Length: 219
Image (cartoon, rainbow, N blue to C red; front, side, top):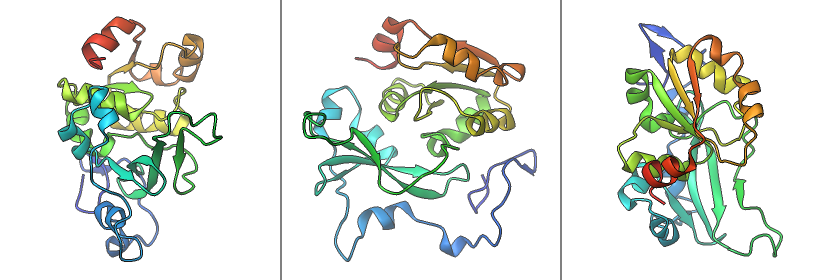
């Protein structure tokens, strides 16, 4: 990754640069997270419920997990494929969210196409070095795996890889890809969405929930 946040391999950029991109305008996660009308927007306290689920507080700091006390949400930054901050995603702390009619997860700003992976910014170098990756649905699985020493995992933020995400994996030259989505995801759907990807990489689908639970996630 160069000083402007672009990804390149063997001297060639794998993503097109934005027109008239100015580094001075690059969004800074800490500045935005910590400021809103002169007051802290998101607290840097650690969500105890995620600690209780087995997520290491030190790992949560690596992934910049924060809390929006005003909205009662756990918040984390979202970076685009060029590692620039494009928004934040929040997970409600209300356990009765369905009963009170609010979303479990929500974006603070409109994101558009999910042409990125959560965790890529933090683990790009290792993934690019190993040319292999494990892909989960959500960030919690990524952080649990990271604590177990699996520092080459990503969150798709969806149960079906889209064309833009597949393009990223192909352009990075990833050779071994393990899909470890939740057990309720139709395996046929996974196979259909990875048809093109399998032309460029070995794609494995992990369905052993005991392995995911006991070893990768530590639940």
